[in-house]
Amino acid sequence: MTQDLRCEEVIEKLLEYLDRELDTETEHALARHMETCRACFTRAEFERKLRARVSEAGKAKAPESLRRRVRTIIEHY
Image (spheres, rainbow, N blue to C red):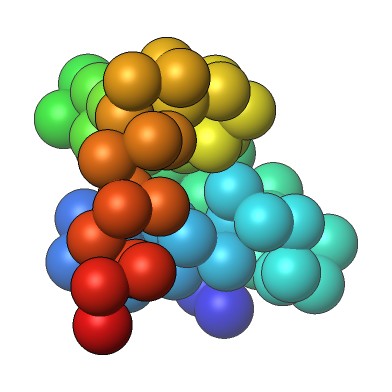
């Protein structure tokens, strides 16, 4: 990957970057780009925060009233 990335290239590789699935050279190139590009940095931060929120939401336990309603619906089908 070239040193001077365009925003489109960064966005295309952003999820792989956040998942640490890129080779070291490409990862460093994206990081360098985001050091100087506010738009790409902001997009990366949004994706990081979204992932954190989704992860936390998956850990929440449903209230007992909702669990009862779901059980009732399932039992009737």
